Image: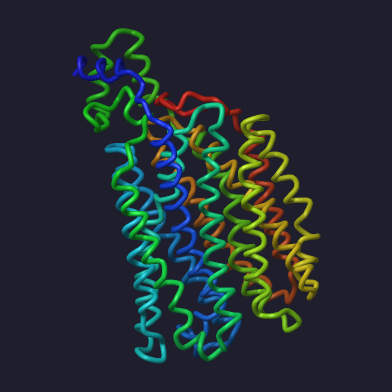
Length: 464
């Protein structure tokens, strides 16, 4: 055992070419784009049509709440997927897990497009919708975490923030593609056409993207950091008892390297990462999911305006995301985090005033501001910072759990809570208050977190 561990520690750095980095970047971007396209397709459908075709026998307000609750169910499955696939990724490598998650997501999304509606099979329709949503969420639970870990571990240290931000561009690309598809459908189809068959088209089109993503990942090389881990032998991580045995027989340096990864008390880095995630996830659920349906209830605003606003905001995000990544590489993660979360807090009420003004330009500007500052900007930083906070032995598992638990607490519950509060109060101010609370949680977490820029990702222990 000692010889195997020492040999693993002395293996030369895993070499990756520019072509390998490019393939990893495209794979991470595409998989994340697919994940967010799938979820945005669903969230927009939940806000626009699912309350009518799967929950038709209730009032419009209750139907919207029920549709949003079904949207939130997927986040529970994501947590289970994060645990299952995260542990698998830390044990046998990132590549194998990313291959499985893309298959699960793509298949379940395609099948949503062929579901019968409530009018055809009654209560069984929303039941099947929930089942597919659970399968979709189970696969997605480790997709963005795996893509984040893979790309961060591939990236050169000095450009880690910029390159890792490509994962965030994937979320932006998926959001844009889904929103654009829905914008086209809303523009060219009548209400009857949309409800009878038009809503199925975006889900069916995702099948082609899944095939390409699966093909690309089959030839992807494993993360160089995973291959260099001192606790990995022959491509598989040693169990805790095996590492303990190796520590007992290794010299002081080798023993301390291994001990750092398995004897450190876990928890602090995880809760800091959860707080960093909370603001971005909560803001995303409100801006990209709930507000689309909320704005559509305003008779002064055209039905395509909310989706158009998401499209334009996502286009602006193609500049926002890499710029934030560069700023994080230049000034550090904490400083940029503190700035963005502060801006989101200050802008919450002005943004909501614009969005609820009834003016199309106001809605466009308000949604674009909220999306780029409070969602995409924070996501660009989150991609690299959370990966740097964790040690390589449990990075995949902890990152996936922090992302998905934050999603359950903020993104999944947020739209349902917002729908309930706005129905009770008859006003938009609870939405602004929720944006402020989410952003302040991230501000405090960034203030308490260490600066992680430039950290050695091969180290087994967490940053704190």
